[in-house]
Image 1 (cartoon, chains in turn green, blue):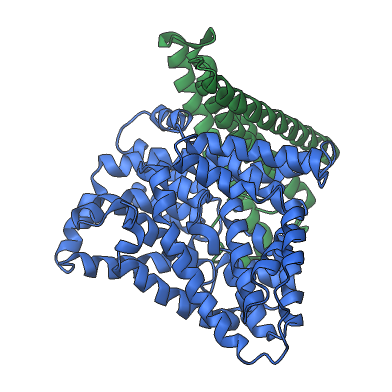
Image 2: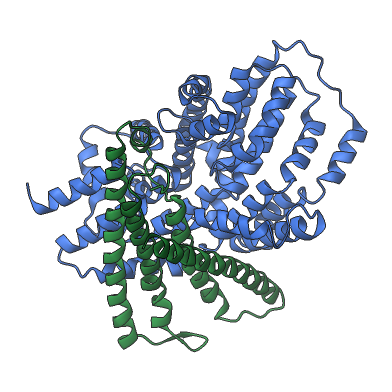
Length: 170
Length: 421
């Protein structure tokens, strides 16, 4: 079970990393292209929104990596004290409680963004390059579900592995 | 106690216990919308607003450019150039440290990269010049956030997006106050240099020439960003794209400091993980701040404040105290996203210019980086130089006092921020 979960988490990590790298190269290439085209007096109206949506997508992919690395920004007032606490149980409880909170929050956000996507699919229209606006809105439920999965995996792995210090940052 | 009160208290408690800020923001927004009887999908609608922010592109590209610079040998080349330019002066090496850190922080967005990338280079040079360990460690720790007011710093861009203030104007507004901070710390460096008996190295035109040749690819970068934006040739977004493209080409193909296949994927992953963490907070905070503004929370705070704050100067004094506390407790990105929408309408009522407010705000948070107990630079330096955090708390005190003195100047002389307008 643990190995399956770890393998699935590694797969998500690789997917997030490769997608993020591709996104950055695409953003950079398109941004430079837009400057070049502007100097040539050409301004395609699809270019800028496409770049902005790629940045929007990269926010969630980066968020997925931040989840696995424990690199989310947080208030570090008590975390240092807890990490140095002698009670291993307290450390375990603290870590899992926060992961559970993040999991619940991201799951609710996934549901709420899916509702938004459903409304957009019904009432939205073409955005640019023939793309329906709901496809663009789908970035949010996709991104949030990816982050939820990362939290879910981390919670399960943490529960299976017990209180191995430092194995999972918050 | 109502269900709402229990839910809010639990979320605040979890925030204090170290829950990621993005989850806290999202939970607060979802709870607020739920208890107001608004569909939760409205939070997602607010999140989607980020995709229409015109300057959003500057965040990943400038951060990427900064990380590429930090990972390459650019710090070594720039250090040599700065030493050739300023190293001959009394206190020159410390002043070099101030300028080079300011340059790097401006590009890396004060994310701790400056101390990690430059600390190991600058510390032995300062010690070799005869500066005390105490002075050197304190200086590097403080310098880790020094260029925050200079373009194209990420906190300035984020502030501009949140406050809807022109980023080009914000870049200009931060210039003089940024130099005031350097001047104050430079003065302290000169004061400390008096005790040093070592003869300083003389000025060498040949060395300067060689240093310029070595750093020839880095020299055009600030010129391209500042000259491009203020010459009206490019926008801030285009400057971000050109900077990122330029450092990528230079460091991968010309200087070959970074391998395109081996090093760049790592740099991209690291820089965009930070960007992802920031943008996620920004996404989730959009829902919450919109709710707060709809409920007229800033106006209610203003009404409450009016009874004891009667003028602009008293307001700025209270604001400084408040922001110094915020800077001690929160990181700069969360603080900008959470606090700016609340204080902006209040400051406007007291007649504070939005550009001046931005500079005061960012200076306070810059000080927050070295303010005990949770100033992030203190922890990064503690990790980088293998010293106890308590030791760094003590070392930071003189610098903290100097930075607060500079803050007083920046707060009560608005002209420093508004000289260009």
